[in-house]
Image 1 (cartoon, rainbow, N blue to C red):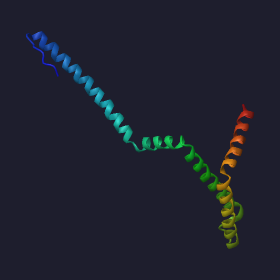
Image 2: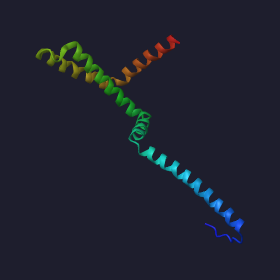
Image 3: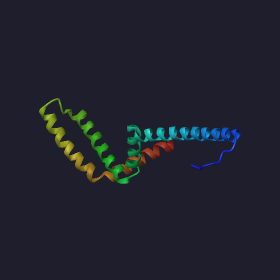
Image 4: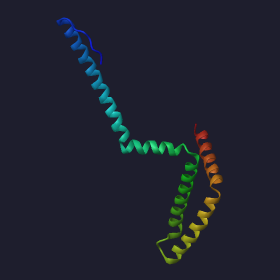
Length: 127
């Protein structure tokens, strides 16, 4: 803060107006900074930023594809074989899930490339 020598009434009034203007601009800047700070603490923004970082990582995308394929396969197996219908269905679905899980985990890159080719060919033909 600078010390100015004020010698008359008009200089004093001018200096008061300057300080009020500085105060107002500092208050506006402080309000903006507080809003930005609160936004960064928001759980939704934290999750969005974390997911954005995770999705950009190829290894994480590959693992998410594996999980998605396994969940989808298990769902289909449960619906087709009928896990809850009988003990035979339960044991059969467990066996099929283990085999499909092993197949998916060993061939994930191939499966993902096949699905991506299918989706890309469908989007090109619909355009």
